[in-house]
Image 1: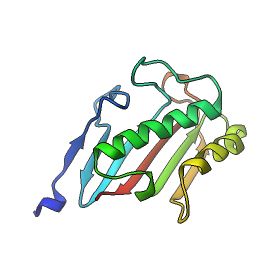
Image 2: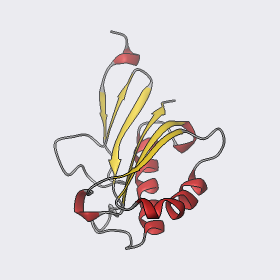
Image 3: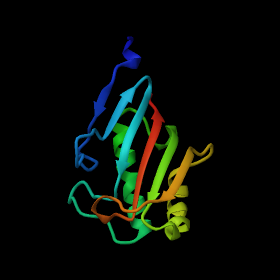
Image 4: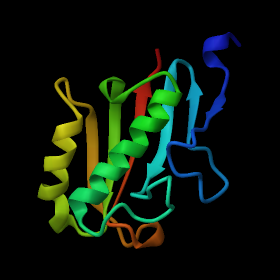
Length: 131
């Protein structure tokens, strides 16, 4: 196994700590796999806000902090998954999402789920290239 294939956990205090037995992200094979981020402000542990736009922005900020720690960034994201408490929030989430990503846009799946941790309105995970 060469150094590019070794698994390495990623952790930064600039994003919420994992609330279970998982890593904020894992680097492997030149990629970084970022766990789903809910809209917790890492400084307070509380939601950044109560509306979908504010919560989406915080999820993206958390992703960016983890990606930066991993040696990547939002500009290197190749795939995202967006989970929404209410698919009716899709348009508002999409407006904020479009502020964070530019062409070529990452591949994406977005769907409504039964519930999210701590009753969040949105959770976002991603896969990105490192380096």
